[in-house]
Length: 194
Image (cartoon, rainbow, N blue to C red; front, side):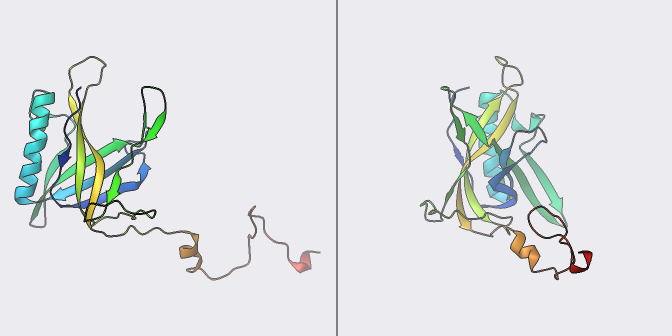
């Protein structure tokens, strides 16, 4: 399939975000960077229209007819929105056989890259995403039958940081107790044991 122009989304809200670390999205051992992306009203319809045009061009049918939908319309407690699914395999391999990362690039609101410390992007973050639509087939040489929206760059408008909990976070929640110590988990002997 020929390369396609990236789609730049309107500003939306991220849910279930796995852009800092990939996850085993479909429990198949192939890790992916992924998120759900929420839009409402005219913004939602504009993105659906762009995706549908790619689908009609690359697959020959509307996006709503795909077996694996790339969006779903949701009505929850009187709130109506569209939830889009964006995902990309964490690693790729060049034609020369070299592996490379497909991690999305993070940009600040002014369009400049973040420095050495990348943001910990969490649910609730407001962002605009550059997507590459990828039409695929289940058998090599067959006509494409599916579409994946692959995130390439994330322009963060309002950051909600993902809470990263390390051992220090939990250590302060517990009181000291007698028991296992050291790196091997062995219980330290009491003086009375000698």
